[in-house]
Amino acid sequence: MYFHPIEDPDTGQIGYLLADATEQKAAVIDLPPRSTELLRALLAERRLALTHVLRTHIHPGVPMNCAALSALTGATLVLPEGAPVPADCAVRVQTARDGAYVVFGQQVLQILDTPGHTAHCVSYLWRDRLFCGDAFDLGSCADAGEDADPGLMFDTLSGRLFQLPGSTLLFPAHPLGGRRVALLGEQRLRNASLLTGSRDAFITEMLSRRTPAQRRARPSSATRRH
Ligand SMILES: [Zn+2]
Image (cartoon, rainbow, N blue to C red; front, side, top):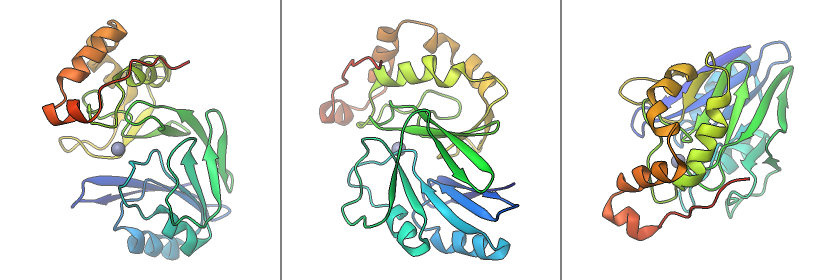
């Protein structure tokens, strides 16, 4: 196995390159926009074939390199079910459905539906590592940005992510305060007061963290996830 975080210090985004050393096949999760050349160098250095380009989520209107990267490499683009597909996308797209798997070489990623940060977010579980995108920020519950739904966020965190073993390693899409990885058990303890309270109290707390502009842009729905 091969594992290599790819961080863009200018944008504060982190992507992850995973590879099967036996069959020399690789997958990349949430590659930062300006890191394509670095990724290609890493692939060439280890003679890896990129088979999957995965996204945990997409923000409408935010340009990304995932479709172009898939076209360049022939890799399958994996997007969350319901996520907006880039308009210029002319590559093979695999829908990331809850409970399904992505296989590259002898490695297997399990897909977990984890909406909240956006309506269509997934996380990828690989061995003891969870690549959660922005579903959760290290040290605190994820931001209350205008695409977020605090009710879905509560359902995801309390009913899904924090049900995983405490020894699971969380790898987010951004560092926080210099941290880039955390034990799930530690984060569960840190956020216990927020996530063991009521769903309504959580929604109220998350909405209170929004700026006035964010509140005007998108009021929260209180839709419960089933
Ligand atoms: Zn995001």
